[in-house]
Length: 410
Image (cartoon, rainbow, N blue to C red; front, side, top):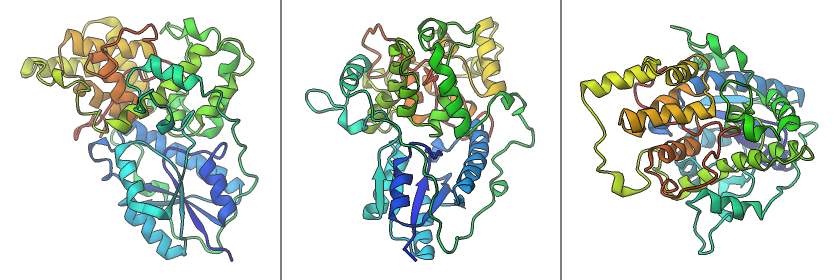
């Protein structure tokens, strides 16, 4: 029997257009594994809303694997140690994975060394390849888009494999229920019923977006109508690849605005690649001495903002939507974030932490860059841009977050 290989899954829970899966299937019997490591990200451990989504998408993905003759192995602990132990246990010599750009994942990738076979697949283009004339990463989105657009379109997405070769013996696995990802006391997820995590729904959402992509340029600005793609959590968890979304709207009119939103995700990962502490540190150091409000009055105002009790109807509606559904319309995200930092004069990191725990689509790159854009502390904030709405619908996280030890749901 050929030596098995491990397929290390993170935010790439799909079968279609999965280069690491395809390469692993050609290398030998595949053992797909998801490791829940709550220590590696530190304070960036997944918030409550993301954990709800993770439970359902892992369940969906395991069923998809079963249809291909495979199954998902679940393990919990230090991700590097778990993967090394699995290699020893199964005889696997290589780990296949899609490259990630969160600083904790880059650290884990480096620790695995030459045992790890990395593939690109979660971006429109390899993040390191979209460079300025001097060879650096872009700090201004409009310039980034021009450079990326010259490299487009991306290649055609690859189909899901017909079958996935299985090992002769499967290693033991945790059960999903063991992980207690779903809220119970209390169960605050009743309003999440409109979401259907998983690859099938992601593909359906992309298909539904195609015929209305031209109207998106206007409709995305109207919180009162369903004018956005609602693809953001599917993209965050890798249930669909960006190039699948890009090509889904081929032949349906001018999709430039929609595609620029999709490209924003690539841009933000380029920012955190060069500034990995961007979720905690001002992009422009001159703002480090900014006198944010503190004390009891500020704490009371922050709580009122979190609970949707400021007395400003659109702010309160947005914050209550966030709590109830794990999502907020892109324009309302901008309004609520601007209200917090520019009206209440509360540190952007407080809002970022709240959003991280409450959003199903909370994404490190998107959220840190978006909050700093709104607060004016970020590398891109000093430039007046006509494309100021970047990431509104496909990113749908014009503002997003980080996590605190006492997050809103944990």
